[in-house]
Image (cartoon, one colour):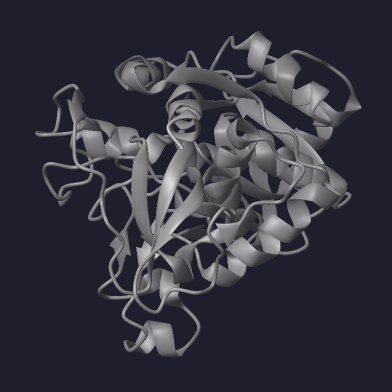
Length: 348
């Protein structure tokens, strides 16, 4: 198989020929169709996350077809299409697993970080941590659901029943969460990089009531803007920028919640206690649970969630990462292995 491999952090990925990985007990072997390119992949490659296995095949938004099963694996049939998320294994024994908080497992292992991921034509995964993909989603559109969608959905749940919601950073996760929140009847306010009018227009197309930037520029100016200034009931920060935390706290009303959705964020600057006072809550999101995944995968077709993707062939994974790093991706970046899968079928 071909794979894009990380040999050292802060180095480009290398395209290599490798033997197909074989499934161990409880694992499935997948012919990979597509793999989303996530900001967490950037944090792994750029050295913000410090403990990757090396060499490593990154990628944790994998869509593929089951081609083989290891001993004891029987949850999915050969030929079934499944998705693989970030959480790849937990011990099932620690205090977090026993209390329904497997996302905090003390020995958890993560796809594309401690486990080889989906920047490859073939992958293996623990079948317990795979999800069936809804029939209505083509491979490329399904891939972003597996992290951007799942982490966004968990973040949204932690906002409670907030009727007015601010999304700070409008990339892969936010463009999915916006659709879910609108479907739930919430009023969404999208905040982008300063001057990014194209993304603001995109947010409005997806149902946001207002779109602007964190410095006051706005694609629209109407009474909704006054409501933003009056105080949101909740905000989710998707951008990995710690300086947005005081901005978001200052935008939520007393009793409101600010959720930091990323696995990595730059340092949070000091801020006056008065913007936290008033029973405002500041919290983070860590990973996901399988229950999150099952709920979201069932909900997505009912919304229905539409994912906007920029497609790249496997060998252009470095370009996809560069585009994501520079903010040039509209929606979500996805690697496609369609040509490889067509060749596998032709070979029988």
